[in-house]
Length: 166
Image 1 (cartoon, rainbow, N blue to C red):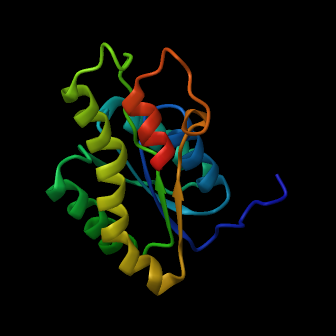
Image 2: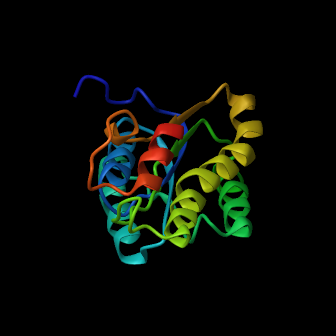
């Protein structure tokens, strides 16, 4: 990989690192030389991702298990990441939930759950990270889905709305 070291000296905070794009991003960033803080609700998968990240650059990532809908946890996540590494260069908002259903079968509770995790938590985390990212002239990556621009009939309407907003 010719880009090895391209992220050397950078610190990235990555959410939703238990499956899919999240762990892949964390592992790649480590291979590219970044130091990473990773978070997820699933402790087992978070630990597995941490092990794979360490193989990428020999450095153990900072891990914090928790729920991004908990405002105190989100503040703790940003504060402890910056305290641990001394700065923040990259925020990757990847965490999301999905619940099956159509407009006819989805409850307002399901809608609220999806919007709280996928939109509100992303906004809150970004809001808290921006002052640190401004200092480092950092970057924000909001992971979305093709469902944000192309609806699929079996996908929950609140998921489609959220992906369009993100």
